[in-house]
Image (cartoon, rainbow, N blue to C red):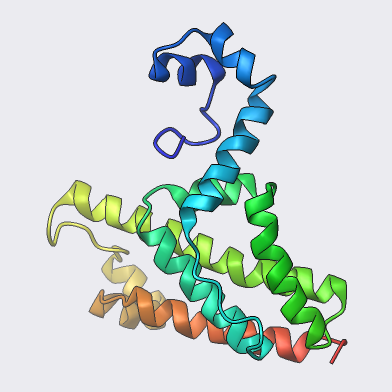
Length: 196
C-alpha cells in the first residue's frame, strides 16, 4: 500500500500482488476497510516510534515525539502519506495517542486541548516528511542542480523582493526548518491553552 497509496488501493490489486484470488482475500478480510485497518495496525507496529519518557514535561515530550515520528517516517518512503490518510485508527496507533494525551492531561490540558496539541505536532511531522519526499522526487527527476524550488522572472523579482532574496540562496535546511517550525507550534499551543 505504501507504493500505490490508499486512494488507489483495491482488494483485487492486493490479491493479484499476493498471487491469490480476490475471493481468497475476502475469506480473511470482510471488506476493503477491514484490510486497511489491519494494514494500518501493521504499519503502526512497523513505525517503531521511539516514545519519549512519559514523565517528561509536556513540551519536551511533544517535541521528542515529533522528532521521533519524523526520523521514522523519513526511513520509510511513502509512509507519511499513508499514515496521514489513515489517521489513528488501530490499537497500535491508539497506544501512541493515548500515551501522549495522558502526558498532556497530567500537564493540565483539557481533553480537547490535548487532542488538538497532539494533532498539530504529529500532523506537522507527517506533512513535513511528505514535503521532503516531494522535493526529493523533483530533484531526482531533474538531476543534480537541475531543480530549483522557485523560478522568478526579473519582473517578479522586482515586485516581490523578499521572495527574491529567499529564492536567491536556494538553500533549504529541512532539519532546521522542521525544528524551528515545531518550536513555533509548541509556543502557540502553550499560549493558546486555557487548561494551564
